[in-house]
Image 1 (cartoon, helix red, strand yellow):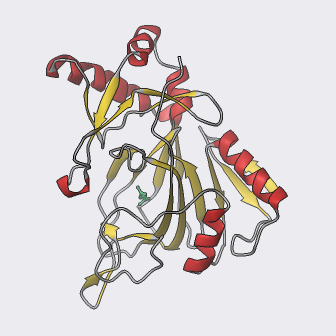
Image 2 (cartoon, rainbow, N blue to C red; image 1 turned 135 degrees about the vertical axis):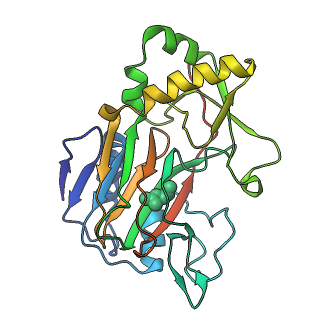
Length: 269
Ligand code: SIN
């Protein structure tokens, strides 16, 4: 197995692994270590059935049936969430369309949000639809001291834009979280899901959030992945955010995602 770090803010390509085949414990340990070190790993030229994707996902946690309602034309395994703009026989195969998805950490609007996400690219557009990830450790490390002091004391409420996706009691998470395995601190706010800071008047909350969001999405923290069919990407939502570029609705894009869930985010002072 070869691990080839990207030259960007995060990520490493893994070569010499067939994701569809059973793995040795030693290989799994190396891959888990690489995720902790590089925050995201990817494999090219893979061929996965749903069953193989679910089996591979189990090496990294417990892939849960997705929390969102299944799309009408989606006949994939129950642990798989299809991200797609394609409809067949008038029935959508998946969700999330072709538009931009702004930066977010998966499912941060839940009390126990996503930890690792694993995506297999089945079909991708020739142009557009790239996904970008931001390194939230680097964002924390580079916070200006006054904003960092402030951020360490605050919690923020996360909500999905569609009411039906939200829990009855809104999820509130620390703005800076401690990664449960690396013990490093990472920012945990996103333009897509973070709504307001707990306990602050609206204007002050908006001002602090705006400064934080401007900071955490700075280009030097961001790495862009240009998808190819057969890619498998694993990322750690506890220390990254991601955003998707829009693409033409006439293009086909089908990604299959399995989702591991984590503990409630916490900050160790
Ligand atoms: C997601 O947020 O999981 C979707 C990512 C993508 O469409 O690239």
